[in-house]
Image 1: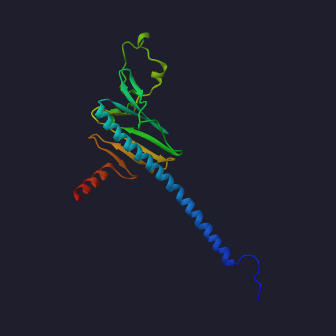
Image 2 (image 1 turned 180 degrees about the vertical axis):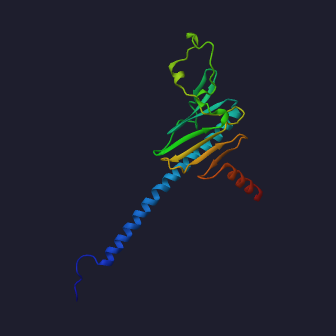
Image 3 (image 1 turned 135 degrees about the vertical axis):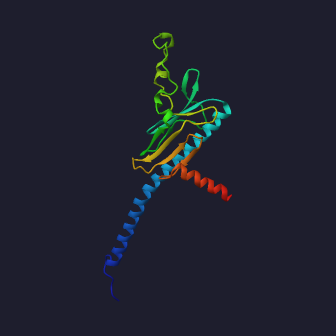
Length: 201
């Protein structure tokens, strides 16, 4: 009876190499997909929260705001003393984005002077009696306002991975539509698809 030589045959080595190569390809292709899924999830979450905020504003008759920063966004409420963080809210908390994901906001033409929103020069600005506290002075106003009517100031919020420009967008237009757009999709395409779907039903 012939003894088998110790070690691996050429075919066995080739099979191992093929399996390793296949595994490497699977890992490499999975990582970006996971990141793309995270971007989508962040955009979907923001879309849902913006919808809920509009419903809450209309129900309670108050004005809300959303402040967008590159790696987080948070919610504000308009009071007699100006914009204040929305505290003790069940859903509307400070939302931090996952690593590698950034958010940017673009406003409609009427609202582009975003950091002066609801600000005006007061004739009393030099009077000590009207000076605000340090905390109030540091509170930046929202770029997005959700009015008590349930309407939104027109905006586009884009979520993307490491500046790859394959971004998901949440858009509020001039006529009150609030939509979630996939990468490369326009609001016109989205509304047309929704209209066709409604006709089929």
